[in-house]
Image (spheres, rainbow, N blue to C red):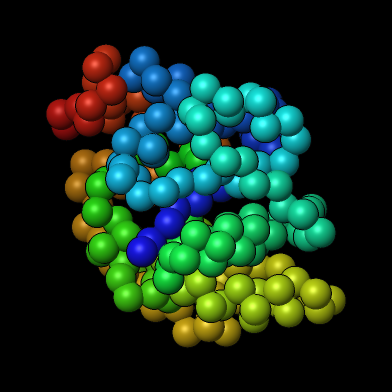
Amino acid sequence: MIAALILAGGQARRMGGGDKTLLPLGGQPLLAHILNALHPLPVAISANGDPARFAVFGLLVLPDGPFQDQGPLAGVLAGLDWAAALGAQALLTVPGDTPLIQPGLAQALSPPPACAATHQQGHHLIALWPVGCRFALRAFLSTPGSRHVMRFSASIGMRMVDFKAGTWDPFANVNTPEDLARIRGAVGDDGTEGAA
């Protein structure tokens, strides 16, 4: 079994703060587009702060725990522990600001460890992690030093799976208002992917 984790812990400084995952796109929050693509996998949200802001989605919200403020790998670890408790063998992670991801991502990345890439550029948080790597990740976060996702990914032998980017990069993310405006061009008023 594969579980999925939406990483919604960023502070969205370039968007003026707040939760990027709740920004509207095609009549739905970004988070809803991601959930549609992840169905039917069991999904949790990685986020600190008041979980009530995500209550409408009915999903478990996982805080970073003892490694809070150490970057996205803290959320990945919380997700791996949750996935292990479910009996999952792997965890798919997706940032909460990538609303154009497509169904079947977990299968395309199998077997773990693997991350998505477009034009040979790796997207190290759009990744399929073996649940067993949580022990190495806990040790990594417990040791002083870099918290770069790429560094840990390399240490577990993560490979890149190249995806074709058509008119729209399926892994485009929303970092700025300009990014959101561009991505809105990819999504029709009904929330479906628009034509070129």
